[in-house]
Length: 400
Image 1 (tube, rainbow, N blue to C red):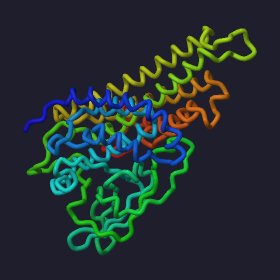
Image 2 (spheres, rainbow, N blue to C red; image 1 turned 30 degrees about the vertical axis):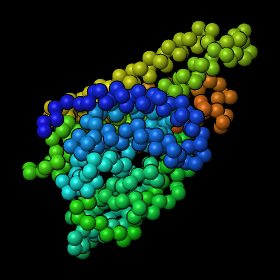
Image 3 (cartoon, helix red, strand yellow; image 1 turned 135 degrees about the vertical axis):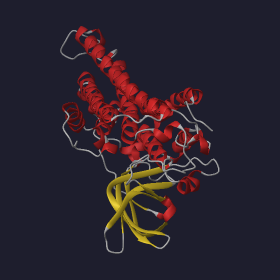
Image 4 (cartoon, rainbow, N blue to C red; image 1 turned 90 degrees about the vertical axis):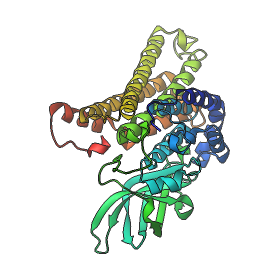
């Protein structure tokens, strides 16, 4: 079968389902924070809505939606609750990565129209020691978002031989029932993501569960059977980065909604304004902030559009396009972080009370924006080096 386009009909339906879930997610947000993970009942809602089917390729019964769809749905879920939007995004991304893997790996994970959830982490990499038929794996991976709800974990490992010499690098896939999860997630924001630490000690993993990255992520060798649709040709880091920005947009939109609603009822103390919204300066601030959030959204749409074109045409993004995407992603985060900062000045000191929804959203936005893939100073340096023709750049090409 020749896959040449994306499932737009499914995208529209899934966006509608995400919007329908927003009231429930807003209601449950404090519970997620208190428990430091998403509730089982809400995770079932995400499953029943079909969101994990987005991550499975159409050859395995998945929807075949676009990267743009991923970001848009992440924004809708993030508008309801940032932790839910983040877990959705991460599990989708790590599951998509497994769909690029060797035939035998795909056949085990995706067979029988099963739509798995796969968590994962890359740093620091664990160790996979070569033995007959597979590997003995040891590792400890932090920041495993959604780990208690995932079926599989995909973790970066260095492959070593019996002389302790590194002979490979890639992802090893382990059922979560074989993992130990340490309760290490104590953060001021994004509390509900359950981004805990996954540990494995001397576990045997058969050789078909290893995905070798040494030839590049997304490399498809001649003779590979399970390949051929657009998602198999998406660029690795641009996809993970741009789709994750959808959740941050949703959080910024939710914060804007909360603060603008309150402005119609709260006074500006020590002034003649009985309604903050009647102040011309406040009106101008809301206009400027709204324009910033919309500009951020358009940048994400641009980045995702390039990813979708690359997948549909099988033409890789150029190094220059990837560097520009990285720099524009940094500017996206700058815009959204500043929007959150300025909204909280409008919200006032009372908005920082721990039990206020606006406080939780602001904390989530700030922690999510500071994921290592989002750090603006790194993205700007990468783009600047590219524009000035300075080589080598500071990151591996797959991570730009």
